[in-house]
Every structure is written in C-alpha cells, then in structure tokens.
Amino acid sequence: MALIPFDPFRHLESIRRDMNRFFASDFPSLFTHMDEQHWMPRIDMHETANEYVVSCDLPGLERKEDVHIDVQNNMLTISGTIQRHHDVREEQMHRRERFFGRFQRSITLPADAATENIRATYKNGVLDIHIPKTTTGTKKRVDIEFH
Image (cartoon, rainbow, N blue to C red; front, side, top):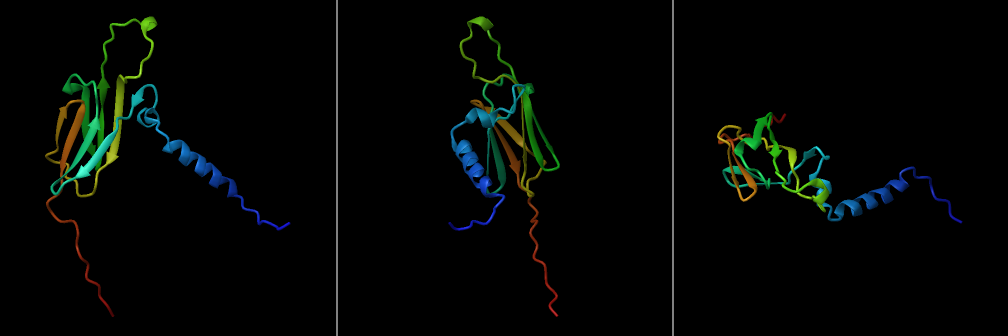
C-alpha cells in the first residue's frame, strides 16, 4: 500500500465542486432576493463608444418617485419601493411569487464614467440608465529614464 502525503485542503476541492454545481443550477430567486425585506433587481451593463448603459428589471413601478438613482464615489445605487395593491384576502392566496416592497442594488462604475449628465428612462418594466464616458483621455504613456 502506497503512502499518500497528508493534504489538509483535500476535502475543499469536493466542497468547491458541490458549490459550483449548486450555483450552476437555475435558482433565480436565490440571486434576486437579499431577504424578505429587500430585493436585488437584476442588472445588465454594456458600453457604446460614448456611454455606459445600465439596464435594470423593475416590473411594477407605478410612479417615478418610487425609484431613486444615486451616484457617489463611482458607485451607482438604484433603490426604491414597488407597491402592489391586492384585492385578494390572505386566506384566498394560493401562491405569491411577485415581489413587492423595498429594493436596492449597487454597482461600481468604470473609472471613465462621468457622473454629470446621467439620464434615465423607464419603459415596459425596464429602467435604462445612460452614463456618459469622460471625454478627456485618462490613458497616458510614461517615459522611462533608461540608464
């Protein structure tokens, strides 16, 4: 029988595989709900030549006062409340999956995102935030003194 050197981290590999398998499954509610009081909406972000576009799924917003967009220290925060008025009594409810209540989501913006002239639109349950890029180039070549 061959001797196998002791590896204290050997069991971590199987735990990592199990975690990868668990998170690879389709659990959308796991990733979109922080807890019963706060919800984290899903966000997509892409860039064009002149701006970054953040798209956020927010179905059920009724008024623009129900959502707030803040930018501070290159951090974009979307927060607010989704109101749902139910005419159904609790004892008549069989299933409740649609979210209502407070939500919040924060993402870090790229370094060349300008915080001025940000505009946002809401249509068909999707909030689109357009963030212009800075016009001044932040890339600079540094000359090396070679001796």
